[in-house]
Image 1 (cartoon, rainbow, N blue to C red):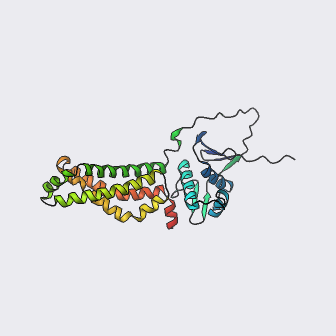
Image 2: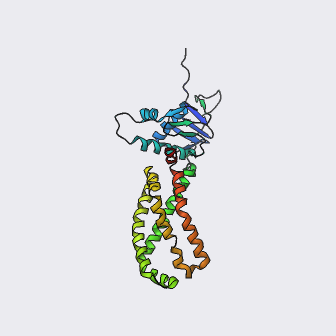
Image 3: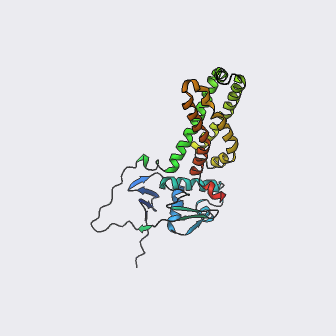
Length: 274
């Protein structure tokens, strides 16, 4: 008796995973997905609707004699997998997080052997499109958070280069305090540049712990940002009163926007807090 054909393809939504070659396609277009995230996906697809524990994933993907940060590696793999699938932990379509326990694949899955029907021709492989996974919510959130870090770096750099203009601006606005404000701006700009470079590099390299660090230092970082939210007032003569106040309002909201983006990029922080 012939052996039962091996299930090779797993189809869910617009996606198709080739379990033999380790390839993932969307509408026939091959997506970029590293080996470890794909292995996580394969384990989840093997038992749709059932819990796959963190211990099972560790035993399968991280051998007992391998010295790695398992939590870091698994969180990174899940984040990259969700990014490619345009999924999120808050409103999951495919991968559901069970806090401190593991993950579950919640979409319906159809398995096929890949055998061709009589008269059917093999489907040609289409070229991968670079933008296929770049438009996911997580990728957009990372890009926005990086832009905000760059914005603050530009503010600090301009302040350090043109600090001699702060004194006359403050004196013209308040009649006093120009020297104090100048020194506060210089010191906070130097400290702010170090902080923003740290977060910029961590976000750019997609380090999972950077989100945890951001939330831990959010209060002092918010106070620094709210201080710099007043900076458009120094340009009130050039911008006008209305535009200056509008800029202050926008910058005052920015720290909270950053916190929201961090939670979107690193949803496992919410799961650990639950």
